[in-house]
Image (cartoon, rainbow, N blue to C red; front, side, top):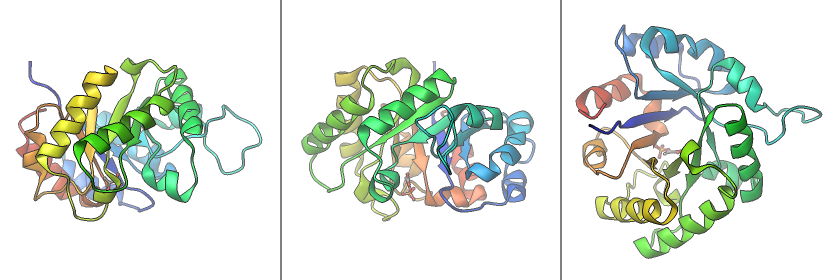
Length: 235
Ligand code: PEP
């Protein structure tokens, strides 16, 4: 059986008009596409679930169920808005919002309890060899996935130096890190993220152990996303 290659689009704090995605998707079915708009646009985008079989993701969640947590959004609220997935532990949140690995662990558990699949981000900040990257990733995952059912999570391997920099990791690097991480942890579904775009996607979708891509910048261009999906024969 062919594996499925998942395209996960993280709009970050940008607005992509729903009409632009509607025009690009037309009436076709995209059951390997996950769109992650900002919280305010989640409900609006949820109509693509019915019209195009697109799945929906959020970009963050509170580690708490409810209560006095001004500005936070709970996992059950995300579920009500239509989220099937939620990105957690993105490097931007670790760096800019000082999210800790133990906080991310609580968020992951909260999502699983609400039947939302966590997309757990990890990756080294300095461009070094594969051995260094594997050691870094395994140590982060060890804490973030403590007492978590590994069959219920997706991991996104995102070397931080490749995010938004236009510098994509080499095929050898991606293959070696993801294969080793899968072997050591037993995690079966791992995405690659970091400057994935129309000029490098074919090399990356060809790597057997890569199950999908977490896409930042390119996700703001619906036509590009649709073209990449249509030209990738793993659906
Ligand atoms: C990201 O922020 O997770 C990401 C992969 O961004 P970009 O594709 O722009 O590098």
